[in-house]
Structure formats: C-alpha cells, structure tokens
Length: 361
Image (cartoon, rainbow, N blue to C red):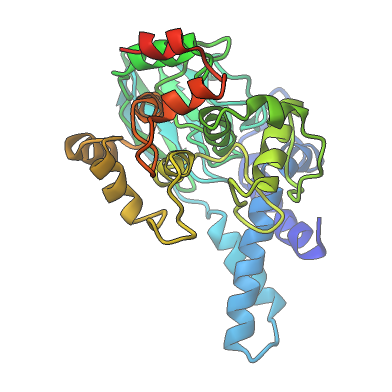
C-alpha cells in the first residue's frame, strides 16, 4: 500500500480505537489498534487508495500542483466517517447497512449478520471478522468493511440499534422471482450458495460479471484462463479471480480504478443491465446506450424490464432477485442483429441443450 494510504488508514483506525477504548474494561477487552488494522486493511485498502487519489487531484487542481498533506488527511478522514451516532427502533426483517467505516451496535433484541464473506463485517469488540448468518452480539461494535449491503438483519419482533458514522436502516426485501431463479439454475446459469439463492441481498460486482460470462456461454474459457489480472485488490475464491481476470482480458468489464475491481462491492442495476445488454450484442462503446442513463430505456424497449418493474426497482434497490428476473428475460430476448434469441444462441453453440431452452417457460 502507498504511504498516503497508510497515513489515512492510521488516522482512521486511531480514531476508531480512541472512540471505542472508553467502552471497554479489563473484563471487556476491545480489539487492539494493530488487530483492527489487520482486520480492516484488506477490505478498505482499495477504497482508501481511490479516495486519496481523488482528493489529491482535487487539491492539486486547487493549489496549482502543490498538495497540503494536512488538508488531504482531514478530507480523507472525513470521507471515511466522523463520530456521529443515532439510536433507532427497528422491527423484524429490517436491516442495517452503510458505507465503508460505518458501524452499529445492537442494544436490544436479536439480529443476524448479513454479509457475503467473512471479511465484509468486523466485530471490533471481539476483535474478529463476523461470520455470515451468525447472531449479532448484543452491545458489540461492528464496522462495515465493504460497500456491498452487508450489515445486520433484525430477527426478533423489535430491536434497538445505535447507528454509527453514516450507517442506515432499510426495510427487508421480499423476493418475487424465485421461479426465474429455479429455471436459470436448471440450465446452470444462476447458482446459489450454502445459504440458497440469496435473492434478498444485493449482487456483488464479481457475481454480476460471472452472470455475464455465463450468459455469453464463456464459463469454461474463463475457468481455464491463466492470464494475469490488472487488479491488485482481488482476494478469496480462486475461480472468482479467474472470472475477473478473464472478463478484463476480453474487455467485458472495467475496474473501479485502473488497478482496483472492488469485487465484493455491490453492483447496482446500471452495472448489471449494462452487462446483459453487452451479452445481447449492444455496445456502449459504439453508442448503443450510456451505461448509467439510457441503459434503462433500452432495457425497457427490448423487453428485459417493463417501466413498472424499473420504477419498483428504483424504490427498493437492486437485489439478486432482479438479477434472476433480468437474466431469465435475456434468454428469451433477441440479440441486437435480430437473428435469434440469446438462449437460442447459447443452444446453437452447445452451451445449453435445445431441450433446456425450449423447457424455459
């Protein structure tokens, strides 16, 4: 990690430890500064790098090329969260999430950890990562390490939670497209985990890219790819890193910066719709659409979504449930040249069987 990132991270972690130290005692130890750095380092490294680079460019432009290190540190620290707190009363199914560095404490009731991997959420009080699906410890201080919707879900009828540094609440999402997910699973395009399809959480950028590669019928090529990825922030699942390296090599995707992909960050609908439009042969590079604006209009025009579904998605947020719906519709949608549907293209290439394609309802 570059020196400026270590400098900013030191400020951030020092502030956290100073704030939490008062809450602990001999019988209630909190994670040490070095331990917190180790837990936070990997999830937030690329985020800090990107934020620091942006701030540095802004300051350079304002100061004719010179950079005020103190101002840089203050702006970066502020962007990572202050010491704000507020207490809220929640009901069963409601969630708590937030930006990187946001946090929460469950003071009354029960809740479960909602996260994608064991490195998404940090249990500062216990000094360890929070395991997905486990019970949230009452009065424990949790920090959000990845911007992918991770946090906690209330499992009791009522709960009281203290929100810290920009953490926020949202109602639980009720999936409605399990049928489409099952149909896609039958042709090996949509898969779940040991926790099922997880239709009620946001898809990650890595998952969205994997869906693009499967819709293109290129999964075997991706898994056999042995090229080098340009991204320095990839961790975890080896095959996941291969998908990303292959997707970058083929020009299917870009990173959030030149050397950072943010694989566990949440993918919004613009990202996923862009991927699906590319699978259908449309090109944002050639001017068919603009990824974060006219992609919506094109998706409605060709039948991936209707306007009512799009409006509802804007209100609820984007979930794996919507990934299943859009992907299923894509198989029945004609590719750009109008010659065949995407599903017919996959069947013609031997990526799925014709029986499976015609079996899609």
